[in-house]
Image 1: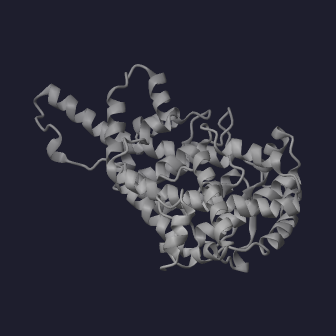
Image 2: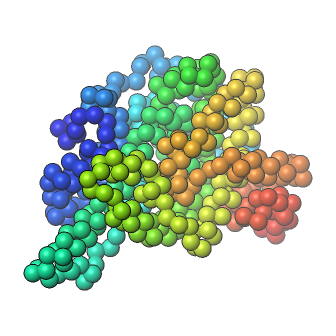
Image 3: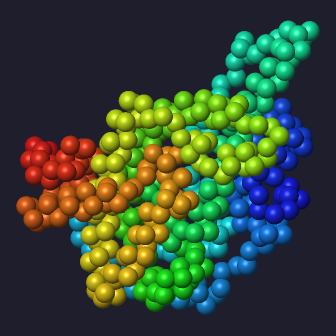
Length: 400
């Protein structure tokens, strides 16, 4: 695979090599899906050093052993938490991986979701719209440009998706803070070197940071994998993706405005996820988005509540850890924000505050039984109108 990469970690170089060097066109002509290969290749390329080297060491055994031992403590405390859906003992595991390992897991686990996104952002072939007069130089040029755009738009979206996935693997603290619903099989994964680097950078105790992260990951996994939440979110994400047809037009427009003699313009386009995949939000997306936000506000509020309970027992004062990890998560430059935007599952600080207020409001009025029943029926999930009115939600629960 290394022979397929140019020197240096430059997504533009790789994209241009594949488009202009023949490999890209060959794959396209054979009817194979070059896009998924490009996602995988670009994710790996993002890990390359300045000299283009893709070598990454295995996980330090001592770090793996330390995290495994800390996980035992986190799991024991997780078992004491109530108001959560069940998580089978077999799925309460931790796998300590390197960056490449996390990329591989994500690409395998979320292939169907990411493939749907690529399909939605790929322009349909319409031979009738391509000028066919072979004797007209202008028509020939227009035909060539239209064909290039049909190839370039999905290629650039695939490249950007792969690139931000790789950047996410390099920077994530808790991978499940990218709130993509998933099955519980496989347990949680942590990039040990990311945790160590984050602790050093922020002056945090490694063991305490690891315990905080492991608890959050277990709580996230229990919620995102429970069928009532997972299936509803999967449906809403699919609706969000299906409504993104105009994003392709946005990408095509951006491509048409680039000066071919200016490589920096192409690099800037490729490096900006919003310019490639962010479509104007239409009415259908707004309706879908409001429901996604209500569900994620609720689930994130629950994750915060449960994590704080466990952390108070395991760590004591967790303020510094919570502040540092929250600042990292909600940083606009965090690659996770780009992936979340593509899938319509962005979590904001305001959403987290609404969710926390909802949990607090329900507990004050009900004490917890109603929250425990949420996981039995997706109809019990708060609606957009209810996430800011816990009393309204409790009133509806009386009829379910």
